Length: 181
Image 1 (cartoon, rainbow, N blue to C red):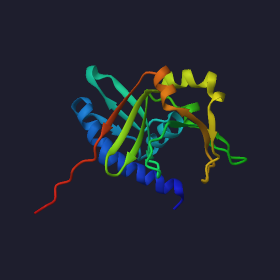
Image 2 (cartoon, rainbow, N blue to C red):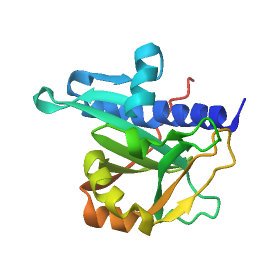
Image 3 (cartoon, rainbow, N blue to C red):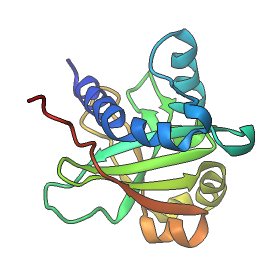
């Protein structure tokens, strides 16, 4: 199993344990779809960067690109979002990152801690891209990552995003599981 596969499995577990109950509560009549199985789901993820679709009040459909990142080992909170500009930089297999091809309505960027749950940032994704691309060279790069695809991108300060793009922050606690007697 590659690091990507391990990280993806971890991210899905956190999503299922913490985000899914939130989606159930927020979606109209519990209408939401997790796009992680099947040919259409794979195409929506790879071509549009859409992980979840849910229905909100008035019947509006909202698409979400989810990023769940482990809390830093230092214990200090992150100060930047890592926005992927190049999904693969391996010669002969180069491909653009989700900041290029993503078409979701929202970017849900979460920092996860086992004890405290998720520190979530719901960001208007089209407006983020509109603001980011004309000035992307101002931001420090990250990568290529030590991974199969050697991904790269830009580290964008969280305060800069909030100063320029519609976004909101909220926290989600892990679900408390009842223990059978």
